[in-house]
Image 1 (tube, rainbow, N blue to C red):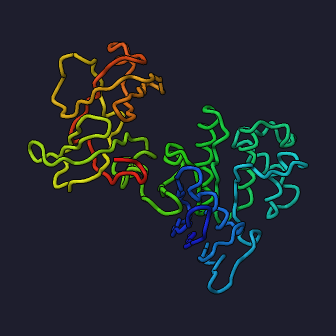
Image 2: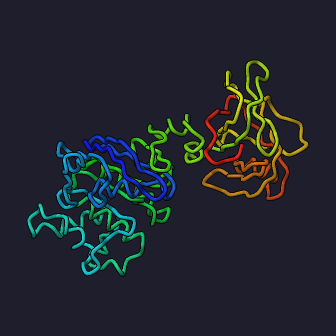
Image 3: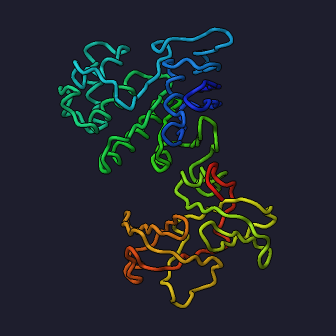
Length: 363
């Protein structure tokens, strides 16, 4: 078990977090750049001394500022993958991995190192030096080296950021298998919620150094605790003011930039709020066309961009506020969606979720 309680001043805010990760489990800490993610990893690894806190792993105290305990990084035995890789430039790829294989007999280290490199698809580069590798190859080498040292905890700083889409899919599967096989607590940080969802059992969202919400990826996506979490998970967030009850106990929100949204949430106090809706819950109709179905929300909008993503199409809209809909390719073709087209964004009142408004946004 990896446990930590940390508090330390960073630029403009204080990092204040408590976390616990069980062996064989992976926790992803997700947040924007500058939220304190990398500082958290450095504090756990012993590379940053927090102002106050305690870190325990596998029953051993690594840090206790009150008791003046602060084990150096080499005694904490963390497998750490840095954003800049921190590889040994003078060593070949296999020797970089073998550096952490001191628990094996010398003759067995090369074979074990090459086997790890093979798991990440770079065994043919075993004799190459880091300077001759691409960014993605160096990233995979760093992952192999971190996992080869039999770490007591695995710390990953944006572990897949440098990989292309094809390599990322393979590396994701390998990383999932290897972290599970290592049976140690794993903590990764990333700004990408989708990446976190693929790699982690749980996600902790942080904002300005503090925990905003923690839970399974599907829980955070379905029930975000704030506008910040909703935006991070890919939901549309619109701000406005509640105007009182609508029909059948519904609540109406006067949106900034114009328009009204309706939610089935009742007993919402008047004042500033934000609403969230998933892009795939939003349908599009051409402006002036006869309405289809009975959705309560109908918001006029202008198409800004049309982008195929996998088997779907993401349509960026201007509805007085930015809005994104996700439709099928057939719907795109049928409606003739293109930049500048006038449409109506349509969604059900039951798909409109109320959350606190984001800090700093005018509503």
